[in-house]
Length: 226
Ligand code: ADP
Ligand code: ADP
Image 1 (cartoon, rainbow, N blue to C red):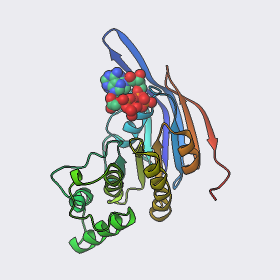
Image 2: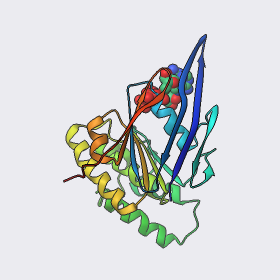
Image 3: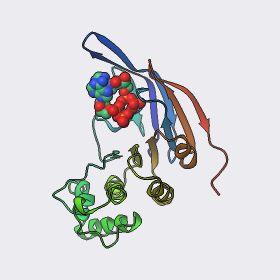
């Protein structure tokens, strides 16, 4: 599950009297279980593409499907994690992680167990009752990753999830992302500015170029991690 097809996707923004070709005929197929990173300079359309994958916005032309279903709105089948975590400040860690499970069927005890296992997985055991303002940046990002994973989305979308963190926390969380991916078996699409991070984490790196936003090259990462 979590197989993605992106077919001839285009997007033009009109800002005052300027036209910006944010995406120009972008096509990409992502296999179930693949970890893809999208890199490229600012303005090449990475965030726009990720928003389309999440169903937060729609292309002018072309089509995106996940497991054969056209993406045209947000869904719990596509978890998204933003650079600025976006935890709800009036909810504690446990409540933030549980948020997306509210509307899903299932026994409350099973949901509770799922929430606790994710909190453990991201290394926040003991911080269940902590509020976002009591957490460091790295801890907040971990909570956001747990929240994104809670409904078991076949597709996990990461928009610079580690971009705002110091380099030590970042490299620690990179290894956590690998472990999480191993355990959850979801397809992952990550936008990052960090080429090294992309190479370290991904099966395939997609390089985009701006004006117009296009795929310039894709690289299979053959050498496996130590
Ligand atoms: P990236 O994430 O690679 O930095 P974006 O997807 O944010 O790129 O943006 C691609 C291009 O589209 C940029 O030129 C950006 O200014 C423009 N753009 C993105 N979103 C909007 C918007 N809502 N309105 C106008 N222009 C936008
Ligand atoms: P990132 O740091 O992920 O590249 P951006 O700064 O490019 O993010 O964009 C952040 C948000 O602002 C996105 O939702 C994007 O659509 C919007 N945006 C980007 N450029 C513009 C713009 N020129 N005008 C209006 N909105 C924009």
